[in-house]
Amino acid sequence: MNMKKIITTVLLTVMAFINVNAQKTAGSYDANAKKLLDAVSAKFKTYKSVQGKFALKIENSGGKTLGSKTGTVYMKGNKYRISVTGQEIYSDGNSVWSYDKSSNEVTINKIDPNANSITPQKLFTNFYDKDFLYKLNGLVKNAGKYMNEVELTPVDKTKAFFKILLYIDNNSIVSTKLFEKTGNKYTYSTTSLTGNTNVPDATFIFDAKKYAGVEVVDLR
Image (cartoon, rainbow, N blue to C red; front, side, top):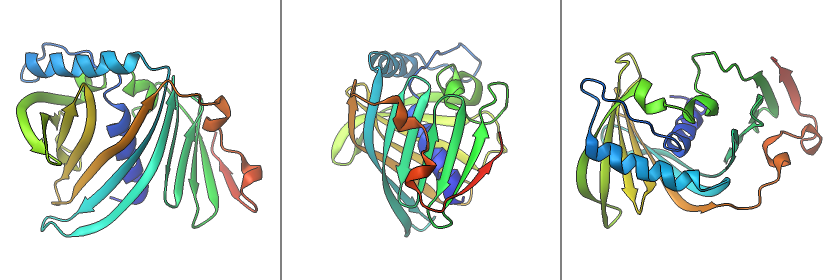
């Protein structure tokens, strides 16, 4: 999985729980998981904006660390911005700017609400219902503390990953583990998360003037 896909994974884990509407679909419905995810959703619906910091660790099947990243995320309505070392992604709800520092290049894409690609708009609706089966595994010890573990498995078995574990404490997802079929594991942890912060709309728009000599590839 390349870094752009890793960033997409981070986006999923940060945002996928914003709105969870469970269906009684055969094999997918777990009343306890639904109750917990609904509580997570309800808590986040009280936030008009979110600002957070996260850490991402990548390991191989033998447990060897392949890399680690830290970053920040901002969300406001259907707008978002994710920043990690060497890469930034901006979206104002209409367009997405993906900036790669090493090449000093930004690629701009138009958001198509009817496309099959992952977009914040789709994550704000019934993302889990369409793409995952889920169940509550109960209390487990994570980072030295007992918290609830929810297991997700993709409906589409051709996905590169076969399982995601969510660790929930105080109605917030504090850690997520994604397991690839190759054996690699991606662990995302929230180091801080603050709701209802003052986040200007300009935060979600890439300003080329701040990046001297940046190459702009506009695909809109």
